[in-house]
Image 1 (cartoon, rainbow, N blue to C red):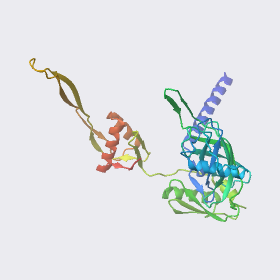
Image 2: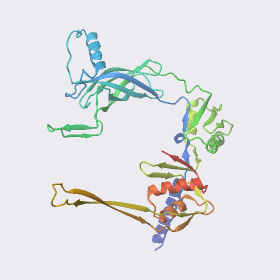
Image 3: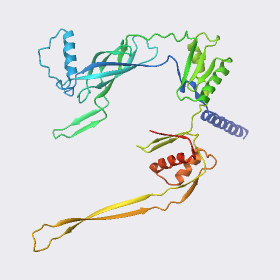
Image 4: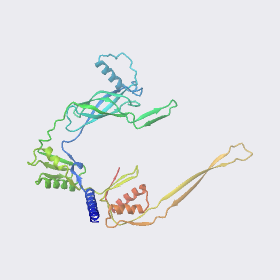
Length: 374
């Protein structure tokens, strides 16, 4: 019996500890690495022009794509084949733009994915192979070379009657690990003594909390909030390099602050509210006005002693129905988001009506939040 009681107590204790651990995780803060960008650690965009070969008659028509014909002639001449006086007619090639992102600190020989997109009137890039294409940076220098089979997550099918079916975009594809980095971007990050941390969502309070968390961790004034989007960071002497310093502080957790905002997409009717949205006491009446127009064509027969044809006479019936709107009190001394949503749902309004109500609340000064329309 004692063993059974002891087992139950242990189980209850473990359950309590598990619940405490769960709630601790639920209320944990956000890591610095998830809300900041480190100066110098960024991607760089690469772009190039290339040709995709091996298409099954779904490529560009040379008559409508002069750049492809010029590219084919230049490429074949470099291979020792003269086609200047020949008439090229192929539908198995397509001119494409090739794009990729050069990761930070990528070394020579590292492989990255590339995206290819048709330029002219190609119908599909399925089954094609990208020919060796240099990828240029913003400075005009080549940093990578791309080549490989194009993977297209789409298809198109058509019949002789003209009926066709297309799924996704067949003129856009990817070459996994299709580019090899040939030139590195040199940046001695470890030797930096000072750099900046950029907030992805600028805020004075969040920047101050980041600086305070870093200073409390290292025990010295190593960080300072310069503005809502920037925290200046100095490497303490106790750390041998900046890389080890960033590795230690990027796991620190804080509670980021955010402005009260309501995001509205009028096209889709999507509404997103932040947790800091508040509304003062206000009375709302919401009613629907429905106008129904019904056309009933009638036929007027002419006199029997005439040869006039029958005449169609339109008959229009217009009916107006308006729902009875009752006033509902919403809010009270800045109620939180949960009560605000509950009150709006109690009114039984549609998302379209809710958008109008939120805009009216903002105009009346009862909504303490910024409204952003997408």
